[in-house]
Length: 384
Image 1 (cartoon, one colour):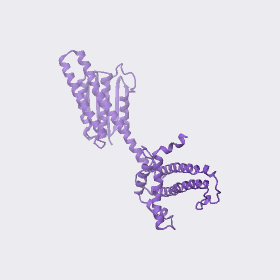
Image 2 (cartoon, one colour):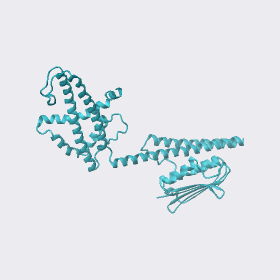
Image 3 (spheres, one colour):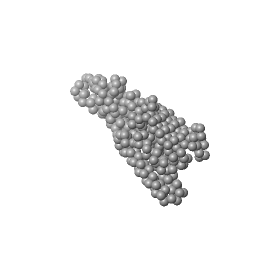
Image 4 (cartoon, one colour):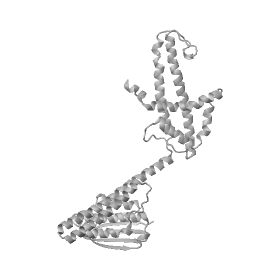
């Protein structure tokens, strides 16, 4: 019983009833103007529904009254973008008018029938309700009085659900809107993935350098070396804080440009950071780095950063050969270091996986793994 009566305690039941009543306001006014043509408002809705902006108003009303509080009601609030959308809007207006007529009839006549049944039970037979004109006064009619009210309750709840389902079908997002929403969602996921990689590469590199420098200074026991190590840790930490500030700025301001992120032109600081950590970096750059487009240059920088971070983390102070080549419409990046016992097979960590993902997003490819006694990270990125 409590479950049956639960809709009476929901505000949605009454907001939906209000939504069903609204079209009858226009009809009620029109009946005073021309009672012989009560169907005229339904005909007027056809050209009205063809106006693109009408779909916005209907969508807003449907969201507020049919699906209040729902995060994703499945009802669009955009103007009609095609004739198909306009046709759906017209169908919705006609369906809403029809449901309003049924709701108004139920709300008026079912309570009247209940009242008249009670009157018949008291010995008064009505002459204005055709279904009860032939009734004979009897106390048994009092037992029938609740049934029209139960029917009214079912009509209100049921018609509200029908109106909501119809609105989702006729006012729901069009195929173009769904595609646009999917593209926006995809862009958001890609942006989150990019930010996660930014944090992993930048902060991971800084922490790796700091750990390696601190360990080397502690083992060396040389004040001069310790001073250099602390300086390198300080410089790397400041660079990581700058990168972190850039990433947080992107999170705070969706429209903020990404041009302030480091590019391959700034790759010198990667060599210096790695050398300060004890690695012997042999860097060779061929071709004009300044001509590489921003997205490719930024992602190339991050690939090198992650590759050098993995060298410091897993191989330590070893010779590292870095080659950057810009030619024939391709950016070629290669980082090689002697293969140590700590690296025994193809990399499956998030860092190496991130390198391959970065390359794939730009339409290129990346290989990581052993090669002729060395550990190699090799990426080829298209420039155009």
